[in-house]
Each structure stands twice: as C-alpha cells, then as structure tokens.
View 1 (cartoon, rainbow, N blue to C red):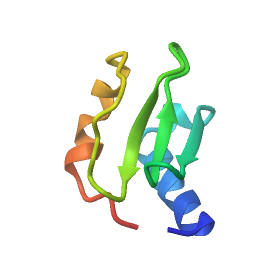
View 2: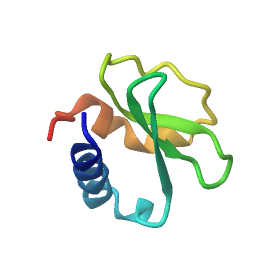
View 3: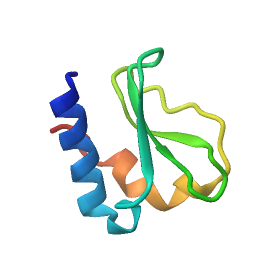
Length: 75
C-alpha cells in the first residue's frame, strides 16, 4: 500500500468517525498496518492491517470502532 492509499484509508476512517479528525495515525512498516493512536492513553490500535491481524496492546478505547473492523476496510 503506497502513501496515497494509506492517506485515503485514514480519510475514509475519519469520515466515518469525525471525532478522530485531530487524532494521530501512524503507518507501521513492521506490521504493514495503519494504527489510530488513542489520544487518552497513547496506545496504537490497528484500523487497517494487510494481514487482518488486529491483535494489539489495548486500552479498550478502540471498542467504539467495532463497526469499522467488521465492515469493508477496502479503499
């Protein structure tokens, strides 16, 4: 996934969850995934993972995005 595709995916995520518009997102080369960084706890939660491996250290805040994880994550 190139940088433009990653940005489109983040924008799609923000459109569905507008309260994340000011939050931080990172791309992790080691896992080939995009993570939303919890603004309260600093924990990374994958919103897209090339290998559908959503196991992560978790503060519980990602539970509000369950619909995203079950929906089509494609571009």
